[in-house]
Amino acid sequence: MKFKGILTLCLAGASIGAFAQSHVEGEEYYKADQLDNAKDLLLRSLNNPQTDKAVSDYYLGLIAIEEGKNSDAANYFSQGVAANAEYPYNYVGQGLIKLMAGDQKGAEELFKQADKLSKKDASLQIAIARAYDRVDPVRYEKQIAKQVEKARKFNMQNPDIYIFEGDQAREQKDWGKAAGMYEMASGYDNNATAAYVKYANLYTMVNPDYAIKMLNNLLSVNPNSALGQRELANAYYNKKDYANAAAQYGKYVQNPSHFKSDENRYAFLLFYGQDYQKGYDYASKLLAEDPNNFTAQRYQFMNAAQIPAMKEKLLPLAEALYAKHKENPSVNKFATIDFTLIANELLSAKRSDEAIAVLQEGIKEMPEFADFNKSLAFAYLDQNNLSKTADEYEVYLSKIEPGYNDFIQQATFDFYAGVENKADAAKAAKYFDAAKANADKAKAILPDNYKPVKIYGDIAKQTAPSEAAAEKAAVPDYEAAVTLLEGASDTSRYARDAKEMYMYLGNYYLNQNNVAKAKENYEKIFQYDPDNAELRKFVDGLK
Image (cartoon, rainbow, N blue to C red):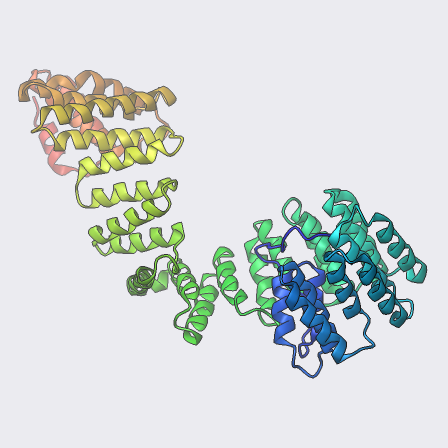
């Protein structure tokens, strides 16, 4: 069967025991279709006394073929024969190379040589079947069937038979049959690690619970399987169960055969599992071991940002991380969270110019991420640059599906940008018109909410032709707004707006010599500000 490429699930892994490394760990990786990991372990353990070099050479040769390095593969197979001429599988490897070169006769002579050494080994027959399948499953269909039949004759319960048939079904996208074959293989031999893993990989994205169950079965048989621990973490991750994913990965990184690169993933999972202190401590440990570990530096900061006690240390961490990123941005890459958290720290330190630069870089790198524009709008607000605030928030709205609160926020920013630009009549009119249009959109969503109507009144005041006109321009809208406000279930959250409108209406009626109406509006302020002694004295003095 032709590999369609190395399987690269984000937490894919290998089966490794708690003992000294040998060829076994790399062999299990290979059988689980995780060739990069297999190669790493096979090379790492090549000179260990527990390693059977002939076995290692066989699998390194197969991996070299998948890498398109047939000359390297030939060298591995020859070295394997030299290490142990009685080990039959390297002859199968040599036969595969001949078969790929179109020399079927030469290949089959080598297969026969291997067969003579095998003592009725069902797994060897499957290895030969895979060689045929690797080159051309259609052309060599009969040869493949013959080898599988021989394997069954020798030992019909050999799991390699069913793993191979599962792989064939998977190649045809017959997922149900593939799963059935892998399950059968694990049933015949509960130590057939690849069967558990391949079954789990069929389901880990679409039904993680199936994968979790199968991988727990594997770990019940072999609790020290690094492959099982890592794959189980992957299944929990795909289920978005980050706490359990981190717990499983924590076991895996204690395994002596784990990959160094996986330590960074553990810090990542601790963050998403919300175990922030542990994530910070672990990332700090990795950083102490390797100060150039940029990934560990990122996770150290990400976790620290979630720990209240770390508040005073966040700015130096943010500065150091950003400096490291800027040394080589194409290598030391950021995700959205890095730009966001660093900008937040700079804003908290009242360093808005630097925060803006960080956010603008984020927008350049990931223009589709709308929250950068939102954060940038508030950074401009921090500088009291209301025009840029309104403009940037408008960009944010263009990238999302806005709701009521979004339109209200935009209308508010537009209104204040209009006020800011009153010296430029045309520019002010543009912003006031935009404020009205966005308030209209909000009102269409929630017609009984007071806020859009208040904004109409605010605009009327600012666009009135004179101060005298401004004193009455907002009356119709404010009266309509307070009527809507008084019908709300919880008016206390709108206290600031309510007091502003009642005060404006009270002043208007007082100027009209309508004292009763003025007092009526002033009195309503006390439900939001009952201890306002100065206002109480003023209202009580009205005649």
